[in-house]
Length: 233
Ligand SMILES: Nc1ncnc2c1ncn2[C@@H]1O[C@H](COP(=O)(O)OP(=O)(O)OP(=O)(O)O)[C@@H](O)[C@H]1O
Ligand SMILES: C[C@H](N)[C@H](N)CCCCCC(=O)O
Ligand SMILES: [Mg+2]
Image (tube, rainbow, N blue to C red):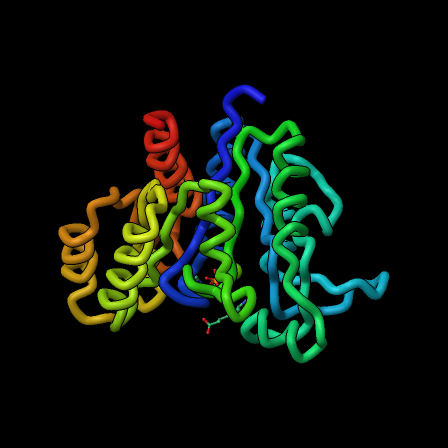
């Protein structure tokens, strides 16, 4: 399909704000009139829906803000009940996290009319799938460019630089990073963000305030910045 772009949203850690920022991006795309689809291929932490199937709250949010209505399983094909490291939850249930299943799911999304496909990771960049494989390996194999959400809190400089170094070392394409303020009381908040901006070569797409008073404006600015990066590719 013409002009379809697919990208992966990773974070400096679990709870960095990948889903929060992804929801803003999907809202921004809706405002721009661009059909965008959000998915979380692998989720851990889920509740039973009315029909007895497991549903993860991140995936439900991505489904809610997607510009195309798809069945839940298209937004989240692999859903594990316990909110823990997915490979460990899978091992406890004697199941294997199946990369071909993730790939088949991605290919299905690419067959839709979505102009933008946002794939949210789980945890941070080096999220294990097995003893040998990480979700990052799958992302690299599929050459998905990456948006890094940095959860701005004390300790985030180390987390961000470790992640950026590994993204660069592995040859990932970094569209940009988002400063997501999860700890608004942090001392030297603005200086932390400026410091990261000086250290990270990839562009700062946007700073997302904590509980922004103007979420639509934040979403709009964020998506415009991301679009500027996507069109130069
Ligand atoms: N900018 C923000 N303002 C207010 N709340 C936020 C912000 N960013 C994140 N949060 C809240 O912090 C919590 C963690 O964020 P989120 O669920 O987006 O993290 P995540 O990186 O997607 O985590 P996971 O690894 O579980 O997918 C959520 O309750 C979310 O609503
Ligand atoms: C349950 C949680 N919210 C995430 N979905 C999974 C986080 C896994 C972290 C694994 C790790 O890096 O230690
Ligand atoms: Mg999430």
